[in-house]
Structure formats: C-alpha cells, structure tokens
Length: 138
Image (tube, rainbow, N blue to C red; front, side, top):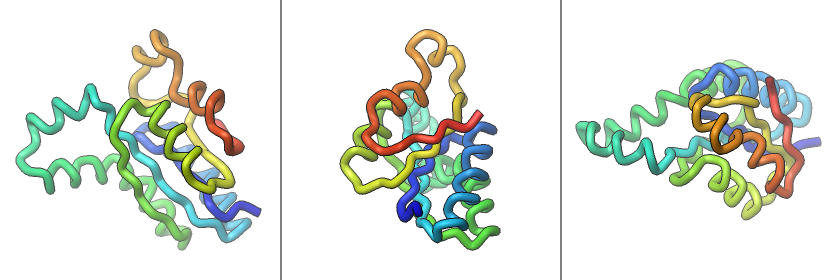
C-alpha cells in the first residue's frame, strides 16, 4: 500500500506516538520510513554556539530521534534519517513536495507549545500545504 512514508520527528512524545503508527503501516505494506528532523534556525544558532564540535552537534541532533530509530529497528523496519535546516513547517512541506512520498505522519503537537499558540502548529501547516496524504497522530 505505502512504499515511502515520511515521519516528522522532533523528540516529543507525540512524535514517538506517530512513530508507532508509522511502524504499523510500514509493516503492513513493507514500506520504507524516512525520519525527517528539522533543526529550527532560531535554535540552531544557540546549538552551534554551545556545541563542542560539529560531530557533537550532529550527535545531539541524532539523539532526539534515537527513540524513534530504536522503535523502527526493533520492528525491523527499513528507514533513513534526514536532518533538514529551516523553519519546521515550511521545510517539511518543501521536502515532501519535492519527493515521491506516499504518506506523511506527524504528531499533533511538538516541543514548542508557545510557538504553536502564536504562529499555528507545524502539523497544521503541513496538512494545509503538503501534496501527499497526511496522518496527524494525537
């Protein structure tokens, strides 16, 4: 059914719940899951200034998606991790619309609830603008 699933992950509990749905759908259709983590420009400056090295910075970013990776490995699901840079909503939309994606899975809330209240949620922006079907997990 689905061959290419994009899973948006940010280290939140909702992202982990979304990953559990991605596992169920990937197992059903033998799909490949692409974990997409977006480093927000606003947070990236702080991270770069306080990181010991580029390797340490990459390691910290990968640690945020590690629980999702562990879940996929445990279920023997084929996956890749893509770390993108930019504002999360538009960056995810741009990435998905530029690739042949069968389904996008995203949590309903991420780590930054204040930004969500002021600017609108990332999941809402993705649902409105992405060309592929989207599953929002609460």
